[in-house]
Image (cartoon, rainbow, N blue to C red; front, side):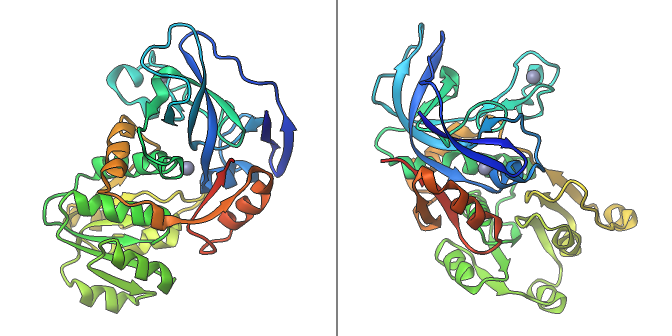
Length: 334
Ligand SMILES: [Zn+2]
Ligand SMILES: [Zn+2]
């Protein structure tokens, strides 16, 4: 099978690998669509914990191509989405349901072969039938599942006023999910006017392009009950904390550089009862994410901006690496 292998930092090569053989309780999926995400770009750049060499791609959907011994409830040819997260299920964190914090956490496309290949092997427990949902929409279930983990961690109160920094694909999935959780008023900030127009069609109450601190302050003088960073820029996190209302929460969702730092006033956090929440990967949110896309409660098709064949993965990664150059980029298979 044709696959793109991340050989090491900045080393990417097209290879022909042996057809994966499903072991007991394993499934081989013929990939139809695989999202390219910032994490893939980070793996290529060597700034994310990956085990090289590895076939990247962790946001994928396709058709069941082979079933291992003991697999029940799946059929050959059935359309499926794959949860890439592989917790050990034995460690102290897995034992209490914190699967995303597993001490030996693996993931398809990060530590084991993923979706930038014609076929992928996955444990049957990670494979979700998607019914009639097109694979290019099902490839959004993984990023939406991560978003839902963030939303669950932040706990959106009905009627809450929310401020989101960043209207990329993740910002717009956050927008739709938070709105569905009953937020009262949603403000979205970005540098790109086109993205903000899309944010408005997807339910933003107000959008602001490159607002000054004064503009943000006058938009809501008492601050926002929930502020979300979907940019991964430390300076934006630092700035955003100032607009969190007393008793409010700040969700750190965008992936900042590991050595990024911000300055923070502990007195301010204390005095204004501020809660700062992190959200890594996904945890038991794959099924609800699938349902939100299937029901149309979250629309993903408007977020898909580029489709490339597997051979063009280097171009796709280049596009994802340039901020603001694209919305969601996918590798699609014939
Ligand atoms: Zn991703
Ligand atoms: Zn574990």
